View (cartoon, helix red, strand yellow):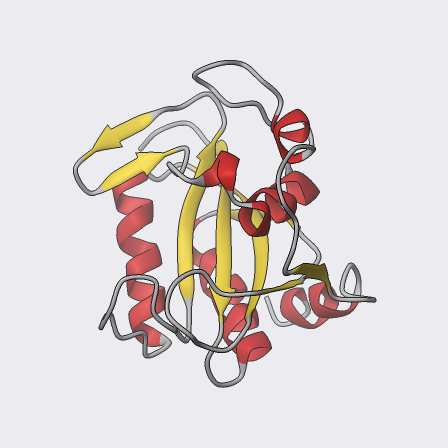
Length: 174
């Protein structure tokens, strides 16, 4: 086991009970570390083939699991939510991405941390900044808060009132 370190997990869902899948994921993540924070919810236009809008969020998790073990746990939670991998960027009940680990870079065939598209995707970077406002790209040291300023945010809307509402209902069952 490694010492505990802060990780940020991106959550997304665009099929079925989107909010319910995200809440279940948060409860499941609590089995792999301590939940330190939850972002607001963001409704976002999909990337890829035509499909319903996503509900996105991020979780700050303090965990001692090695990155590949945490990835395995995330894939297990996706599978429990009925995720089927049929097409790249296709619709899904639950999508969990290991976006960022403080002070760590991972580059193996099955995992890249930080997420390789993080600095180009407002739907992932905005929730990350909600839970890790001081986060910086480890390669360059540039603050993600500065990178998000130049991103196109078209199709990314914060769900009004979500900074408190979904948090309480997710965490109250932990």
